[in-house]
Image (cartoon, rainbow, N blue to C red; front, side, top):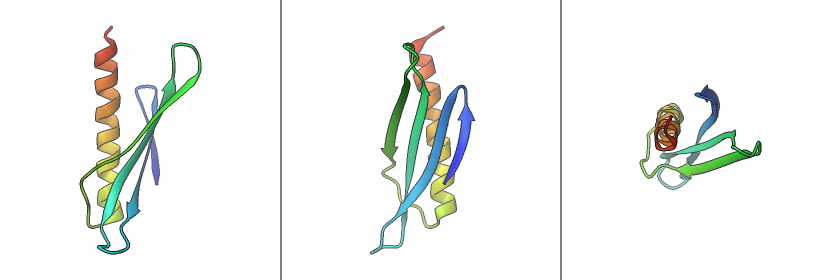
Length: 77
């Protein structure tokens, strides 16, 4: 598992391993400071499967950054 601070969003990336296929599913948890001062979070698992933990972790970090960017664009200036 790895962590990244991206535009005031803490992104935690990891992967879960499918014991039958041996593939890894990228997982993401994002947290940020809400407008009311409370910590907010969003978690998801990507549908894609990767051959290694490293590939899954990298995909999760990239998707986490993209999600945070979409959130900021949606909020506007």
